[in-house]
Image (cartoon, rainbow, N blue to C red; front, side, top):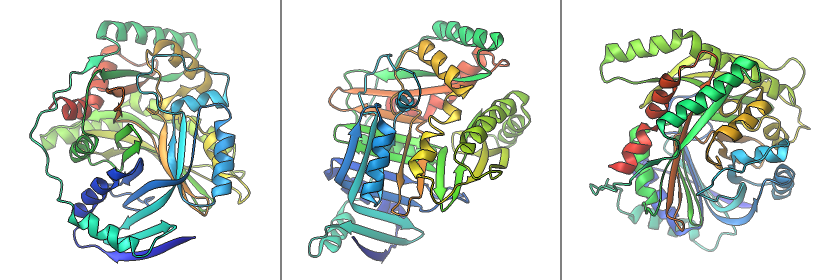
Length: 430
């Protein structure tokens, strides 16, 4: 049983920064922040889970069955991640590309300490609480000096895993598969990386979050491995018997000029190419959700709606379904994983072609981070717009990708990748 207490906060933004700084004393940390982005489906404004009481860490083999057992037996809040390479547990697929990060394929933990923020209210839930532990921790948190951005340049030297000419060659190979009818669409990704490099994870995350203010920001620490994410995308959420999936497909850059910015947004709304990309993935998600849905319950609530973020405009669709009380939450995830927005259609063929053409094992990039609640609800993001860091190996990485369809122009796709990479590059190089 968890001991629960509620507290009213004065300065939310300051407290959030202090809380993240305080959390760094623990080996297992997961911070999720909506950055007050207006959205209908939000349960909390921010969550911090720290200090594993129990955990599961495994490779892809039988990973979903192991997670199912762990989540059932624990019957509590559990937080963690699913890497893209769990596809190999679900289908006869493989991941043999270069991996400089070496994250375990799956990791979840039951936190001893949990902080849930909504409005100006903080709910604290502790397992195995000792004496006046909550008040002692709160005093410690409030005494931490507020974060101020450092003017020191980190000057990380970013390298390209795939150079521009090679990118065009690979895209033309992908287009050949599409024209042959092997696939309709595939998400092709490329890695940018730095070797023999040290970064300060919290400082880097704070800078990235300040630039982007996304609705699914994440700071994850697993011993020496870090995820610093400015994700704008929800993968999947369960609330009661309702499942919500919100794939993003379609991106346009922002402009400082208001008139030009509105024009860019309108062009995205009316783009036949971007709409067709999005609709293909909506069809895939509908099909995935139908595997666990009650008959006739899969619905498209929003189709190709354009949302605006600090860095980009994005086209997002919302698909919902209803599931039976008897449906295990992990089965909903395994039947939809990996998410369609990061694979393509048909999904298995697209993943096979992706593996051949990409140069890097995706790992946590294009996987998902989130949590299960004690009453079998869950919420997971898509790991994009993210910096990954292995402190022991001194290896820093971020990847970007885009949906390739028959109408794709290699130069436009390359330029879209650079738009998506802008915030990560800015944070690391300045």
